[in-house]
Structures are given as C-alpha cells and as structure tokens.
Length: 142
Image (cartoon, rainbow, N blue to C red; front, side, top):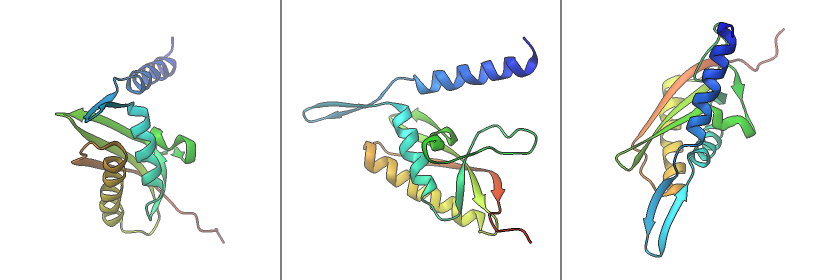
C-alpha cells in the first residue's frame, strides 16, 4: 500500500473510531439519557455555521495549504469532541470570511456553540477550542 493510501486508511479508521465511541450518558429523575458523540458533533457544526463570519467547517488536516470547506450535512466533519470528567471539550475547525475580525468570530463561536450543545445535551461544555483553517473571500472578482 502506498503512503497516500495508508494515510487515507488511517484517517478513516480514526474517524470511524471517533464516530463509534461510547454514548454520553446523563442520569435523570426517570432514567438515563444517552447521546452519541456524532449527534453532538452535528449540533455543534450547525451552531457554528450560523455564526457571523463563519464560511464553513474544515477538516483538521489542511493538505497542501488548502482547507476543504464543509457545509450543511457535512458540518459535523469540522468538530471533534472529548469527554473529560463528565464534561465535554470541543475542537472546531473553521473557515472564516475574509475581512472579519478573527478573534471576535472565534469568541462568538465559543459562546454560541458551547451554549447550543449545553442546551441540547445538558452536559457542561467548559472548553471550545477554535482552529481557523482558512479564509474564504466570496466577493466577485473584477
């Protein structure tokens, strides 16, 4: 197997393992609630896409200086999560609009995505890391 094929297989195996991780559990008065990590990733990805200045989600790995932009149904591909001491930590990989203040977009993302996930799942999200993988200029060229 050549190097590129090995990297693709390894990346697929990591992605597959993340998407099939154990469910997040929360005890409630009448029983428990289980939410799969993939669901949390979808919620976070859609919340991120609604933020001003975000043009799309991106892969963690930038190849040859180019970030792949994920929109809509693929937005979850730009989100990674970890459960630490019963709380969630999220990593968001985004592409921002050219000309926006990146620090403000990142702060807005942290607040909006953390709130959306906490509201939907009921688990604290004290850490939302934002990684800007690219800048997109959607203005027409002359």
